Amino acid sequence: MAQKFYQKASVQTAIVSSIGVIIAAVITIAHYRSQLYKDNARLQNENTELLRENEKQRAEIQRLETKLTPFRTIAIEKYTLPEEQALKKLAEKIVELEDADRKKSEKISQLESELDHTKSLAEPCKLNLYSKNIKKEDDNYRVTLLFRPTKNERLGQLVFVADLPIDSGERILDFWPTDNTSPFLSSNKSKKIAENGKSARLVYSLLSTGYPSVDLVVSGPTKVRIKGNNGIKTFEIDVR
Image (cartoon, rainbow, N blue to C red; front, side):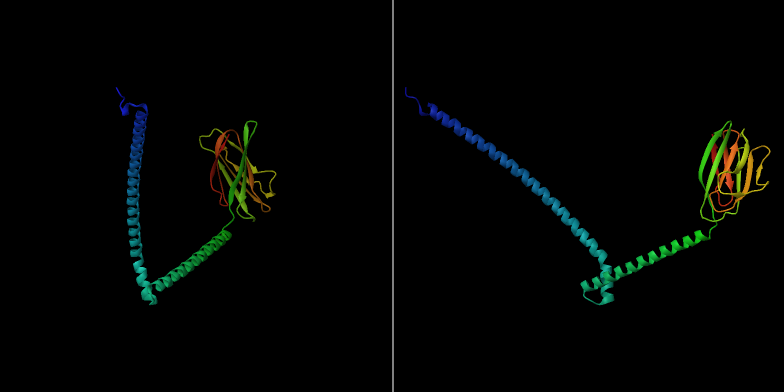
């Protein structure tokens, strides 16, 4: 029996090859179709975003136009020129006024600064605590306080007062200007320590300008409150 033509190996190979080509073509077409769908969806989304952005820009332009309307009216009434020229003249005037206001503000700041400087010159010299040093000497403690004046001028009479808490078990043993500081003037009444040792007062004067320094000696660890004249702000020291 004669072999049919489609049963021949060469024919079957050609058929299989053709089917393969067809399948590949179908797959390719399906892929491109899917990609086209995706691209189309992306373009639609982008178009929607552009439409939204256009709407926002139109709304912003409308808002700016609304804000500009009063200025447009003022410019046209004031300068009686075409709208664009009138707005330009008004803008130049606004810049001029802003510059004048800035210069006025700078002048006010300068005057305030000069006034503050004049006030500081007129204020009396004040003392601020500059440093403190606590040193243990046997069973006692020596507290050295150095004060800095706000101006380089004679301070006059200096008054320092030291107080211990009522419930403190310690005593003030000495209160005197530091030995190695500027020369000072004192008297036998310069130092006064209470009988219970809970408070002490020191009065003396520097013979020249300088940083006043005092030594306070207490019998043991305790809190001490310091105050004085020349604008000294009351402060507390924890001696230990």
